[in-house]
Amino acid sequence: MGIPGAGKSRVADEYIARGYVRLNRDERGGSLRELADALDRELRSGARRVVLDNTYLTRAARSHVIEAAGRNGLAARCIWLDTPLAQAQANLVDRLLERFGSLPSPEELRRLARRGDGVLSPTSQMRAVRELEPPTSDEGWTRVERVPFTRMPQSTALGAGVLVAAAALEQPRWTEALEQGDRGAPHLIFDWRPGGSVEELAPAAARLAAALSGPVESAVCPHAAGPPSCWCRPPLPGLPLAFARANRVEPSRSVVIGARPAHRTLAATLGARYLDV
Image (cartoon, rainbow, N blue to C red; front, side, top):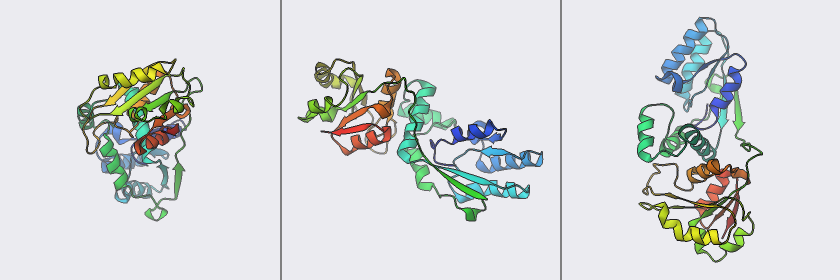
């Protein structure tokens, strides 16, 4: 169990490889109660090793699994993927990029979410965090195993990049910060400009390119203020992760040059080194 993007499917795959039957609502549809009924049927038909990977945010949602196991004389164990929200956000963005090749717009996110195939908006994920009731043994579990999140680098073949917030170029020390990165590495200049476009960053990108030998790309989140409806508004990691995927960059080996708290938060999410100007 865990919030969306916690890494549940990855752990469940390890159990499937050991012969466990998997029950997952994204695959089957329906409610968690209906999934518990499917569990009961599996157990009554003779299955003895079943893995369920779903959010199970509340005690009430989890109780049906424990009851089904108890009726069939089996123990129920809870593995809690205790993943921080920021890291779960990065996981969900990675999934979107893997699946669609680019970041869906807010309108596309809403359409995909209505289909119920596991695509979520940032606000839906944040709602799950607010609803979370951490599991405890007094619910009836034989054991509750808390698994802290650890992000491993994607590949040793990926290089480093430099992510430059547009606001940083307004500060006098931005050229000094460039010295601490690789001037030949791919650079991204990014910003949030409601109603704006990437063309607005052309002057700043030209200034940056003049100080570098490597390529420079620009990216803008044009979406409105208020609760985030997209995955590209900093400190959400959509823009840097899309850039990293396209340029074979490992975010944790990269540098973020910023000037605001949101930029520091973004660097922490990526596991990147942060340089404040």
